[in-house]
Length: 239
Image 1: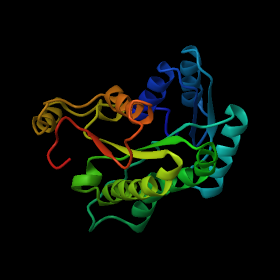
Image 2: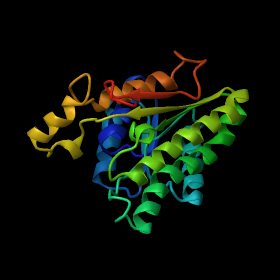
Image 3: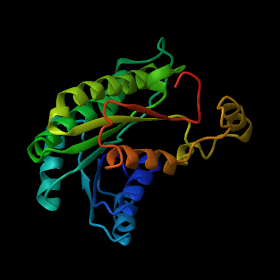
Image 4: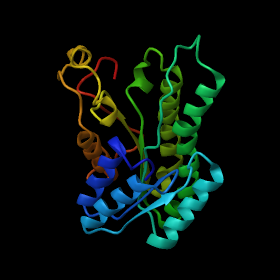
């Protein structure tokens, strides 16, 4: 999987390991955070390894998958979670801001899917879970680049689901809403309360709730589900 060292990605990696899955994950650099996650996963009794690659680079994504296959033998599940924000109103957004977000969020999904597809095609099965966002469905103020990248993930996933279905490779999207992570920890209580008041369930989601949705879509519990966008958002409007 990509983007596993913090937040939603970390929760996904831990949840899959608790379900007995071996986990290969990557980040741009091998640092203390990557090593910490690796040790957490190993402590759960599964095989786990972190790799340093920039998966928005086509060749690096190919090299990442080659190393994983050499170390693990096969890949049954791919979770594409690498993502960033770089927010601004469109009238102030620079070309660099737009390209950076599209590259990390959307191009990485293409690069990783392209890299893993031959393996899954040959073995005749696989599940790809791409992490989108309700923002990719409904849009959001000052996040046109982020919303475009997440909407692109939805279109890309639905197209791949059609192309890959004949080989029993399923492709689905989990679209989180407002989820409490390290990045939201410093939000003032008054602002948090305002945001939560707009959510029918009146609270933010947890990273593990997103992770559980990923496990479900990747698992044998839903062998006939593909091309689905599953909002995990507490009933947010327009999701």
